[in-house]
Structure formats: C-alpha cells, structure tokens
Length: 181
Image (cartoon, rainbow, N blue to C red):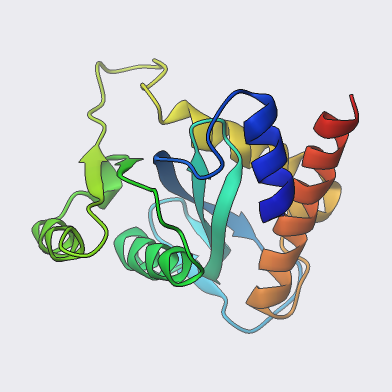
C-alpha cells in the first residue's frame, strides 16, 4: 500500500512522503458479537471505531480499529504513534475536528514536537448547518471510498487487525485502479 501510494503521489506531482494530513474516526456497526466491541455514546452505535490518518490527497497513511467506546483522542495518539514507528518522517501538520480538542492532547503534541515537529490544528466549524470544512473533507471522502466496498460497509471481522487489513486491501484496490487508468 505504501509503494502504491508513493507512485500515486508522484503521478500527482507530490513528494513521496506527505507533509500534512487529516485524522478522524468513524463508528461502524459489527455483524456478530466479536471481540473489541463497544458502544459509541455520541453516535449511538454498538460496534467498532475506525481511526484513520490520510494525506492531503485522501490517501490512507494509517488505520487503527478499536472498540467504539474508545475516545477519539486516545485513538489518535495510538494511531499517530503507530504511523511514526513505521517510519513516517515528513509529516508536519495534522488537521482534526473539534472532537480532538483537549488540553492534555495539546501537551502531548507539544512533547512530540521535540522529536517530530508535528503541529495538530483543530479546524473550527464555521456556521450552523452544512458547510464544507477546510481540509477536513478529505478524510470524510476517504471514509466514503472505504465504505464503497461492501465488505467495509459493516465490520464483519472477528479481530480488529483483520478489519485494518480489509481497509488496507480496499485502499490497495483503489490505488491500483487509479494507476492503471
């Protein structure tokens, strides 16, 4: 997936590694009583939560699947630590929504600046009603791409690592289609 993403970024005239990205989470229902199932009180969904990090083109950089009751901010920390441990080097700016706004998360990100210099910016909502939020629509579009595969419209997997793998397979299929055209 990383190689295909690099090829797509080169084809779009971008550098291999992104310097900016977006993070969000999506609650999704499960089909069976699997492990790591929780209840998301905000969305009123019993299931799992997908935490994703995408670049400015909407291409998947990292994914983490947890029980739905896991807080978005805690999932963000685990997701970002996983991405950085895998070798993410150039990422400097991450846009998030207001659900990630917390003082302790700002302090954690400030401690991260000593090693990786990543700035976490909360995108404020402009007005009431529907309006496209700057930069944040890219991660929402990625969720749409992921859910276009019927296998990902719900979580059918027993293990969360299998759910992550299915999302990565969907991304690989999408990237292959783009590169062939």
